[in-house]
Length: 303
Ligand code: SF4
Image 1 (spheres, rainbow, N blue to C red):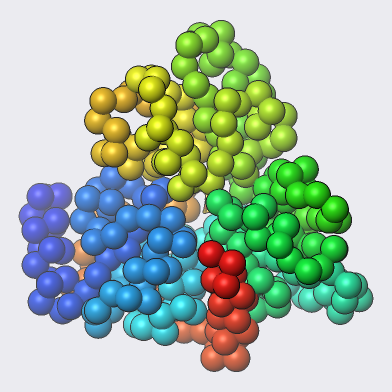
Image 2 (image 1 turned 180 degrees about the horizontal axis):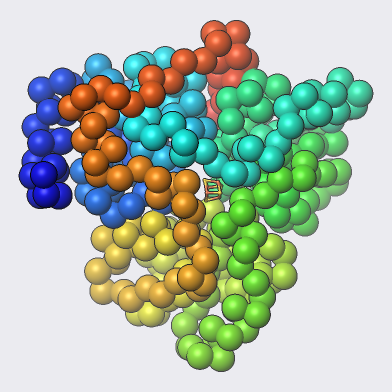
C-alpha cells in the first residue's frame, strides 16, 4: 500500500473506531499530518483529558504515552514499544528513592517528560516552559531536579535563594550541540537569530540569542521580524514552525538534532496499530499512576 492509500485508510478507520491520534512536536512529518492534535506534553495532556474518543494513539516516546494514561485513564496505545527516551533510561529510580529518603529536606521536582515511576516519587512535575516560575514559588529551599541536568543547571542560575541540584541525566539530543556549532553558524549567517532549547549545555545557551522550551520557541519565533532563523532543537519542530510561519525560512543549527526514538514511529506502524490493533496498550499499576497523577496535579495548581 502506498503512503497516500495508507493515510486515507488511517483517516477512515480512526473515524469508524472513534480513535484520536495525538502526536508530539518531534514526530515525523507524515505522523504530524495524520494526527488530530500535535503539541508538547502540556498541550497533549489537556487534549487527552478533554477529547471524546474510545482510544488515543500516542505518537511519541513511552513517557508521553504514560503521561496521557496517567492524566486521562483512557485507553492509550503506543504504536512502537521500543520508542523510549534515553534520558529517562539513565535514571535509576531506586537510587533516587534512596536519595529522597536520606534527604527529606529536598523537594523532588521532575520534568513533565519523565517516566511514570519518576513522577510517582516526585513531589511535583514541571513543564520546561514554567520550570523556573514554579520552582521559585515552592516553599522548599532545597530542590532536587530530575531529569535533565542541563535544564536543572539553567534553572539553578535563574531562581534566587534556592539550592537547586540536578540528578545526572540529560537529553542526549540537545546535549550534543556544541558551542563551536554556534560560532560557525554565527560566522556563516551573522544576521540570523540563533534559538536553542534550554536542555542544551550552558556554554551553548550563553552564545544563543534566545533559549526556551519547545512552546516558548514557537511563540518567540512568531514574534520575530527576521525572515531567516536558526533553530537549535529537535528537527521535528521545523514542521510546526514552517506551518505557523509560512513567510519565514528555518535552518537547523546542527545535523545531529534528530531524536531517533521520536522518529521510530512510522506511518505503517500507525496503520498497523489502528487497522490490526497490534500496538501496545499502556498499563500502569494504579498505585503508581495515582502517585504520578498527584505530582501532575500539584503542577497544575501553578499553571
Ligand atoms: S528529544 Fe531528548 S528528551 Fe525528547 S525523547 Fe529525545 S532524548 Fe528524550
